[in-house]
Length: 146
Image 1 (spheres, rainbow, N blue to C red):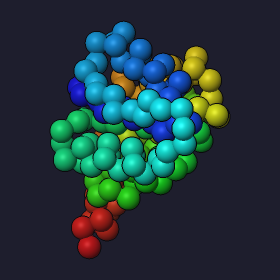
Image 2 (cartoon, rainbow, N blue to C red):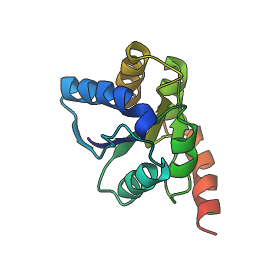
Image 3 (cartoon, rainbow, N blue to C red):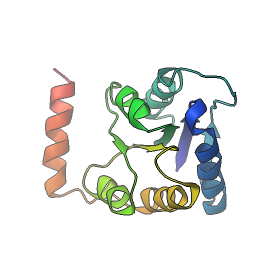
C-alpha cells in the first residue's frame, strides 16, 4: 500500500502523527507538506494529492486541515475520489467497509493526536466489503462519468 499525506497549516501536527503511524505499520508514504507556519490554501494540497490517488500513483491519501472539511470538499471534486471526513473510530471503519473511501480527511482542531492515530490505524487496516455496497458505489461512478 502507498499513501500520500498532505495538510495545510492547520493540520501539520496531526499530519506528523499520521506519518509516525504509517512508519510504525511499515506502510510506504509520501508527505507533500505543508511545512510552513504561515497560512496556506488547503486546495493547493488537497487537489494534487487527490489527483495522485485518482491516477493510481497512490492507493490512498490522508489529508488534514483545521477541521478536515476544506480538504474533504476539495478532494471530492476529483473524479474517482471518495474522501471521508472522519473524527471517530466507527466512521473510520465504516467508510472503508461500506464506501471504499480512498482518502481520509481529519481536522486537527477537532481531534487530538491519540484519537487521530487510532483512526489512521483503523482506516488503513479495514478492507472494503463489496457486496451490496458495490451497487451504490457504481451509481456514484456512473454519475461522475456523465
